[in-house]
Image 1 (cartoon, rainbow, N blue to C red):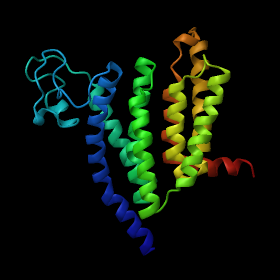
Image 2: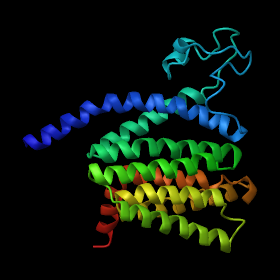
Image 3: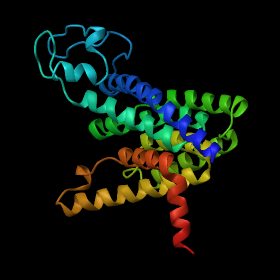
Image 4: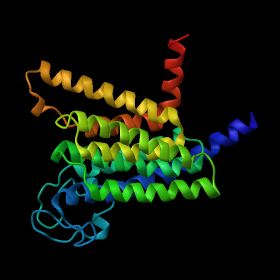
Length: 266
């Protein structure tokens, strides 16, 4: 009983830390989502009003809070600022909190939280521009690969071997699909799947398996709804958001989903 109470206390104490980190990381993701598809630097220039070009002061750049205080408008010219910025920040914070709640191992939570944010950014970019930028995926593979290797040495809860196998299995599987049906699967999806296989594989095979199943189910349902609504394949949402959604749900709920499915078989 004491052990359970201590674990609950530790999880509760980490929630505000993860929420704050999620807001900050979400603010960074808004930069990625806006600038990378346009081929712009994510470092310079600093944040500015898209209408009048006035640099945004640090006090006006606090995630979510500044947007609410300014009522969604530029302090200088009064132009309305898109709600996508605070929504992305809030969603990222929610994902960070979800990681803190779902993954009791602090090592796993620290690894998965930013991974979920990257999946969100890739989903948003693919939905808007139908691309999954190499700058995000390649950098993420290197950084998360290094993080997994470090945690495997100094911490616990991840496996470097299954991470590598997950990358090959998930990425390689979608590569075969892209070769067989090049018009149905883009190379951006293949690279994103490789990243997902790397991180989810480090947590265990069931995380990879659940992600594959959920992504394909969601993609199939989405395509069917689009066609029934009178749309065409060109109108359908690209596969990246479904892929990312499956990865997010798997990272947070794979053990529960796997247990539920196993129960149906008995």
